[in-house]
Image 1 (cartoon, rainbow, N blue to C red):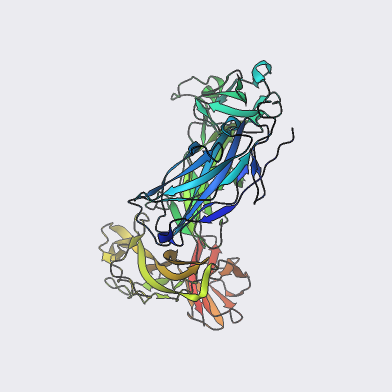
Image 2: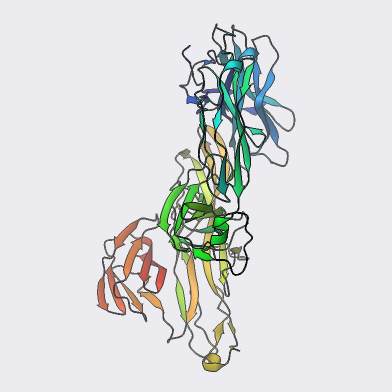
Length: 590
């Protein structure tokens, strides 16, 4: 029988008159039996005995609430109009958190048994219950099934076989497990190490990512009250001859364990993957021993995937290849942002290979802070060490006034305010995490003078002073807005991070790069004690767009001049790539 699948998008005002502005919605994007269906109609289960339904329940409240006392959310179904409401299988959403906002969405994956509904029709709805016990529900979603009712396939006599058992190396990817064709109108679930997946409609193959543990897998056909389990497939994992593969970065991790960096810069990654034990290659159960025969890996593949910050380990991971080499270090990596208007979150991993055998690394969490709302600061400062005891004093780091933009906020019935918090990142023997600077809450910030320490190393440098540490600085702008968003009066806030600038010191005999005049209206000079010939010079605006690439004049090997007179007024970043590495400085066009 032809399968009919339809979506419903329905929003209903709450029936509690004291809670004007609060709504509960079965939101768009509903999927029935693995198919998206159009809005505004009834869910038809057809002749399927078990149907898999993905939906999003959205709750909007007029006033932000304290998540210390959360409400709960559930999906209910009714067999018919007169039957009691029952929580659907998979419909217990638990606590619903708003994280300081006025709206939140909960995703559900539920299963509906055709026997739970009469031919006259049943229904489905979502209900939000506040901590105080007040209930708010969406409108009912009608559900019908085919008049064929119980004419389901008897699968007990249907062949259900899988192929094949296999042995793989630790951290490698197994072959696809294949099964024979599934009869029509039969739902399937896969059971992996005792955990069953939701019923699916396309069940003939299953793929796994790289594995570290032996797993067992089987498939179950389900049609009405009939079921049929397949044979069990075992994927056995044995030791890998690639002795290790662990990736890391020198960028410090923030409180959420992300290595964070500006979307205008990049991050350096490295791996331990190198040694291959040829004795383990011949015998997987050989113990790595001094005197064994070794080789080096012959390939390495870096991959990244965009993730949801709230659920970094869940959902389908779309791994994207971004480099194909055998180097253990990847420099200045900056993945494409998932959105030009928000911070982006990623997982990164590396796959080492040797003669067809692969070993995947750990997954490293990284994130980019996206420059938004013209929240920029200027400029980098390189202070002269003028004597054995004296370092030039720093100048004030100036910041622009952010301009807030929200397409959902009514510009005629809203307003916003801005507050600031400056942060510093200390660089000494290593780069430390960002910390708030006490009392630094103004639009601009004057850094403290750099401190010096005695040079106790002796030898040639003993007559010089050492700088205790250098610093990076950035500014966080907190934008608090009040106004109508989609017809609801709302008050909320969001944070945006500026670019970062650096404060360092140098001896006149130390290699350095400086830019001047700053600010400038026409010419910008780049001067260094290193050779600037054949440098790559990029000028980047506050949106992260390159507006000038290698359009410069080489005055002499240590001096470059760039005409910036055609640029709009504002803050820009100049990226200088030489044989010694990458430098990024900030300048103002006036």
